[in-house]
Amino acid sequence: MSETVTMTRLKIERGETILKVDGLKKYYGELEVLRDIDLDIKKGEVICVLGPSGSGKSTMLRCLNLLEVPTGGTIDLKGEVVFDGSKPKNLDELRRETGMVFQSFNLFPNMSAKQNVSIAQIRVRGRKKAESDQRSIEELTKVGLAEKVDEYPDRLSGGQQQRVAIARALAMDPEIMLFDEVTSALDPELVKGVLDVMRSLADSGMTMICVTHEIGFAREVADRVIFMDGGYIVEQGPPDEVLGNPKEERTQKFLGLVLDH
Amino acid sequence: MGDFFDIFFNFQFMADHFSYVLEGFWWTIKLSIVGGICALTWGLILAVVRQLPGKPLAPVRWIVIAYIDCLRGIPMLLTILLLSSGLATMASQGVIPREIGIPQWFGQSDYFWYGVIALTLTYGAYMAEVYRAGIEAVPRGQTEAARSLGMSHGQAMRFIIVPQAVRKVIPPLLNDFIALMKDTALVSTIGLVEAVQAGRDLYSEFYNPSGYTLGAIMFLIVTIPLARFVDRLIKKQNEKFQRGLP
Image (tube, rainbow over all chains, first blue to last red; front, top):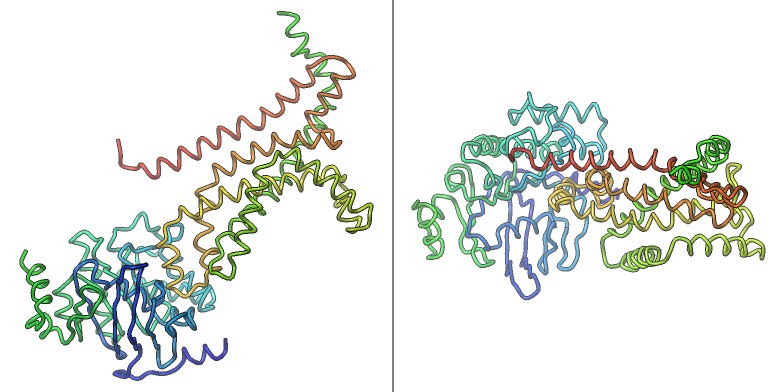
């Protein structure tokens, strides 16, 4: 345990590689969902992953914190192996370093917003109740929900729930945030509030990987855009290039379809 | 008509022997409460063990499944007889310590404890299935959210999944509790004078079944309000899901 704790305290400077993925594969039986994914993610980088549904982008994201166990390939976090091609290592430590926000929010319905944000701080980070409460209120205030700390999820709008979910992940002091189509389940008028929170998070220097359909957000905020299709990374690069002047035919076709409506 | 009342609702007879039946019913209550609490706990343990993840623990899961299937598949009367005679025999032959084979913990008789153990073993198995349904009804996203926050499987179960699951299954658990309460009557077969046996004693002595009626009334005084309460809980839960519909 003590070894793994030192691992999590390793300092990574901005611009250094924080997460390295090599030859990541995922099969569901015969179905190949991820074929051969290589990724090198730098600290502070904001990455947006685009692609048609079924392209494997959500599966890739879920593999990064091992909610899905990959079929092959390796994942290194801060130079430490967290997946060696067959089984996870330092699993709980990896998950402590990576916050995840889901399309369906997944707030705990039997807890208030504050308790949602506090529970893992207390049980996983070992913070005292008073300390965690204070931190929860801080995080909820940052996402614009200072008045809602004692509300239960069923009394919050989708956008508010999603912002609680973001606060919940951030309160764990993650080094990387994973966003899995976090605005896809929201009514259009609620999307902006969530994207604003993500934008300010990006500005604060958080390392972010966002699977998204929000092309505008990707263009504006991403340092790098990844386009996936059929389980491969088809094309990646700065948003100007991938979105403005895509080289690959599949990217052009996809962008044509999503931008033309 | 007068005969009917004389036979089944002989109030004079009931009044004369009220305290005897009540004393029996007090045992019914004690068995139900102690057995009920133990069964609720044991059932939850079984359900949680059954959900343990990973290949290495598969044998543990199989054992639990086999246990649940067996205990649900044999009459509780048989469990009581097998347990009481088995434990007593093993204790008398020195295979197990006397304090375990013929338990008289907290000043209660061994009959009482045999009853409690049998109720726990049998109803624990029933309730494990109820808890399991509750655990499986909690959306997968809840586990994923908990795990993504760094909780272990055990922490996710304890702090996130089980509290939600238990809330969902309180009505069916209470139904099982009502069934358990009625099955305490089976403990009379090994010598405990609970409400039903009290009626039998009175009948064999006075040849009047009003003692049975009195026992039935005592049961109903507890079970009918419980059944109504369960219904109200279910209705309330349904309303929560149907909010907004006409």
